[in-house]
Image (spheres, rainbow, N blue to C red):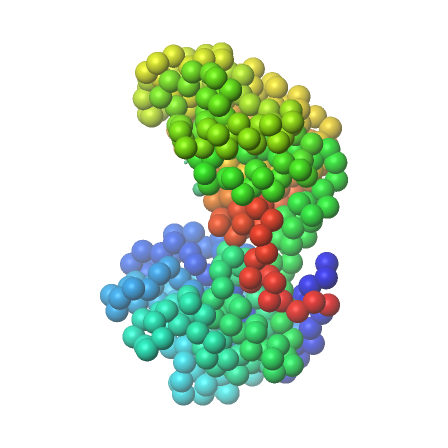
Length: 403
Ligand code: ADP
Ligand code: MG
C-alpha cells in the first residue's frame, strides 16, 4: 500500500495524536457495545509499547445543545478503554485550552490521554460547527499538540472534519507525518484493493432496501464485476422494470428508468431473483408463501426464494473476489432471514476467495447470523464503506501521507 502507516513511524518519545472512532452506542453513561473501542486497541497498543505518548481524539454522537454534552461525554469511554488496555487513561474534560495542554505536558512515554468529544466544538462559538465543518483554526490547534498524527477512524473517513482532515492538513504544512492506523490500513488493504484490483471472477452481491441508496455502488461496480447478484427490496424495482408484477413489494417508481438503463449497461451481468418469499404484511407472523416470477396483488416479497438461492449459489461458484452489500431480505425477521443466511454460508465456504462485506445492516446481518468469522473482511464503517464501494475518494484517507 502506498499510504504511510503507523508501523512506518518512529514514535519513541513522541506525542502521537490518534484519531480513533469511539462513536459507540451509549445510554446514561453505559456503553452498549464496545466493538469500536476494541477495534482501536492495536494502534494504541503499538504506540504505547513503542514508547510514544498516545493522545486520543474521537467524536461521539451529534452535539446540538448543552444537554447533549451530558449524555455524550467520553468519560465512560476512557474508563472502558483503561480496563481494556489494563493501564491508566487520563481523561481531560475539554479538548482545548490550558487544562488539556498541561495534562499533555505531564505525559510520560507510554501514557494514554483521551480528550473530550471533538464535537463539543460544534456549539458555543463564532464559527458554528468547528469540528464538523472543519474550522481550519481548530485543526491547526489540535495539530500543535503533537509531533505525529495517526488517523484510525475509518467510520468517519468519508467526512471532512477538523479532527481528521483539519489536523492532517496542518500537520503536513508543518512538515509533520500523517499515517494510517492499523484499522484504516486493513480497510484499504481489503475493501480498497478488492475494488481497485479484484482477482476475477469478481462477483458483487447487492441487496438492502432501496435502489436509490445504492446507485453509486452499482454504477461503480458494473464495469468491474463479472456478475452482479441483486436481492433484497431493491430487486423489485428492477423486476418491475422488466415487466413483472411485484404486488406491494418495495418499489421506487422514479427509479424504473434508471433500472432499465443499468440492466442494459450491465449487459447480462445482473442476475435478479427468480422466486420470492412473499407475505401479506411486513411482519414475522405474516402469512407467507413461495412464489415464482410474479408476486400476487396484496403480497410483498420479503426474501429471495429457494430457486434464487440456488441460482445465486451457482453463480458464486469459483468466484475469487466477492463484495457483498445489503441483505437479501428483511433478515431482522427470522422468517425472512433464510436468503441472507444462505448467501452468507455460501461465501463462508468458498475456497480461496476474498470475501468482503460492507454496509451497516449487512455487517449487522453477518454478525447476527454468526458467519462473520468465516469471511475475509467485515468493514467497520457504514457510510464510509458505502462511499468506498462507490469509488469515491474518502477525505480521511486522502489526507494521509504517501510512503
Ligand atoms: P446496508 O446498511 O448494509 O447498506 P441497507 O440499509 O441498504 O443495507 O438495507 C437494509 C434493510 O433492507 C434492512 O433493514 C432490511 O430489512 C431491508 N430489506 C431487505 N430486503 C427487503 C425487502 N425485500 N423488503 C423490505 N425490506 C427489505
Ligand atoms: Mg443501512
